Image (tube, rainbow, N blue to C red):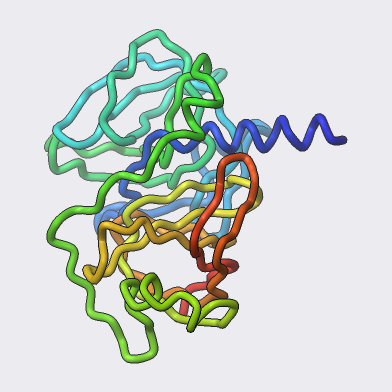
Length: 245
């Protein structure tokens, strides 16, 4: 049992290298059935998110200015995925473990509509090492992040500079999601910025998954000097966060 535990944790940790904006398209729709309906290697959540590890071979790669669009083969299925731009090789094998299925999806940078596509949160080579994944740092947020912080939320700068005041207390924080690492240690790791102290990589853990680029208000307990092991150590982190409706 112990061996299986570390195997699955290892697979999850490998997904930290690349992220993509999982922003819903106004012309597309998430479906609970479709290209992944047949076969036992996946599951669909109620929000249209496809989960669990998939192994694919890239048939065609189109690199846009921001994102990569790949026609891939998985078993008997051929379909399109979109992920953060990268030098993905046609004919090479890659893995992913999270995505949102969309129909009639319009790519503005390609000026092309895909009948069906999967927006993939992480794509990584099956040959890359675990160490290279766990050492990947969160990307720096953009310089123009502006978030309206409600009175019930505590600014990130206040939480960082006065962490002892809020330690072990339930707090609300509002920010723009700059990165998501899903499915690591049975948690989703949400990186937030609110414009008050964007040089600080502020992280919340949650059972929920949110699209990168969205502004959310999360409520959870602020922990200080938290060490999860496997190189995941934080001066402060919001745990078990949930979205405030």
